[in-house]
Length: 444
Image (cartoon, rainbow, N blue to C red; front, side, top):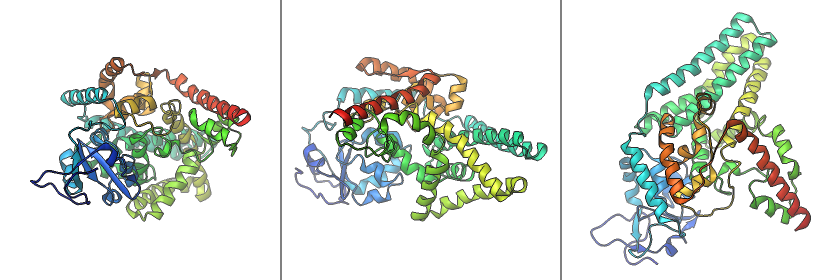
């Protein structure tokens, strides 16, 4: 229990000794209506403030009752600026006899990882090459221009239309990777500049919402592959993932779909439908329900530009079908690249691991090559990206040897695969989970 001091939200630092708390007390405050967390052994009451958290209240709430030091360092570029908002939330500190880590997390791994992070900072690996990102934006704009020129010069026949669709799907995929860079604040030192460019790329170049992406994607980074916390593994009963969920469903005789065939129907409803149907519906409804008019205006500017460009060639209905065909193509690209690093890894309920270990069990890499880097937006370095989300993607390969060394020291598996194998493993893991479900459904 806390000893002395003011435990109410809004208490500030005073000359008098701060209240001290045990982990047992702190872990009681992990409810939606009562949230405490720990950063650098300081205890903060974020209950009311979490609704104003720029990254969304869910992502910060996922660390309620836990030490959030490494997550805090991973997500924020300007720490001095962020700490100004934290001072009014400070209510005390960990009792001197309490360890810095909760739930028995490995303190040595945490200490070594923080030393690794300091080494990366000393190597200037968080410093961005602005020309690199400018060239990425330029090659997207060039592809958009080429697409229009093909239709303008060759007409709207089947062959020019299909070629143009593939060019635009490529530009959309690359714009997706580029908005990802700015969304993670990995380009500019000032967060505000990253936010502005992020809204332009995801809004005007892709017709999506920056805030929707932030609130969803940051949860994935904070607690990857954790049921109830990572929205990317919330499959709405369409798929069963990992090893524990299929058995749970099987024992409860839950059969929303024939999960033993999920590795087959995934090909029909996963890659083709994620972006043109599920994401598109979720993005639009989220912007309207949250009254996010700024993001909606950016998204509408994309649709205005697209239809002004292509309605003269295809008419309104034709342009709508053309747009959805482009998103159909992009969706395949997006799903295979994003799932090859995560879906094949451990997926389970909250195990309370340290930051380093939690990212390594939930992510794997794909071998480096110029094509793989470009094709995946450097998400072939998914391990390093998850450990250091604000690190510019062009530096991820430089920190990889340090990560491998730390893994070897602590006996943690560092997985790296060829591109084709990584994609095929998605089907294999879905088949395995389906078989686990069927066995539990029939025999347990």
